[in-house]
Image (cartoon, rainbow, N blue to C red; front, side, top):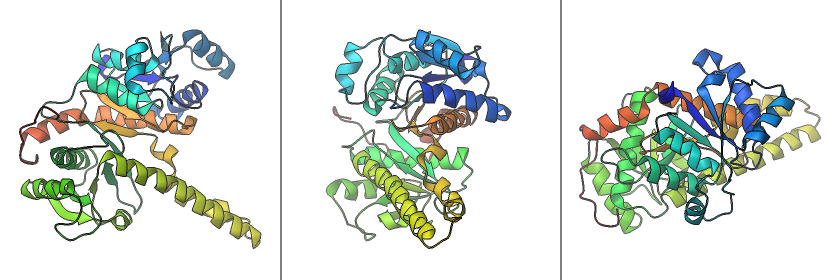
Length: 344
């Protein structure tokens, strides 16, 4: 059970722990056909509080609970918090994976602390320079994976090239895209565009065995031009947050206008559009490249997002995503190997 178990950082996020407990209960009800049951979930957090809330919710008392006496808050410095709070729920959830008592972690808490703890405690897969946060969306009816969404805000060119490789392997072996097309996010499609970092990353991606189509612009994310979009963590995080909030803003405006003109079914008719861009639908993001399955979600995640993040963790475990990435990087799909320097 250890390798297939999911450790939940129940205390992370704006709506913890109640959103996590509701989400876990919902997942056990709605994802039973995917093998999600109470004994597959390990709750990590304030045990007395968790037990009391489960009692209020009429929850399943078969959940195993691992007590954690500390919580890393969203506004804390990740490095300092990890050093000062050894008994934090984030650290203990990731420790469960390191010790083989779980195969995956789901956290909606402090992203920096989660990435830092996972990288330090689990290590990276063989050959991986830096892990990256990937998100897969279905904006056009076909999945597109964006990487990195915030783990590495100051990457080197070889990191970006490796992100293209890891995302390609994930899309090919886990999502069934036969030959994933890889694009490098830039300010123009022409060769030679962008910063020296992007120009060097272009050369590395082009020299590899990926289906690299060259530079892509932000608008191409919506045009089914590529299956993988490679970017640095700063740009990726800004794009993701802007996409989510603008979509919410636009749908709210459209719904309001429809209602003002007497079209009462406006919200219902836009429900499918809402699901495409709603962060709670995809639940969370995969931290690709670490030696364990780590799902990171929004701090504002509700119970629906938690349930879907649990579903994503199950799929990643069942697809053996890390085994595929490790094997793929060792094979010809990997970009040319560049010897890391002291700052890799």
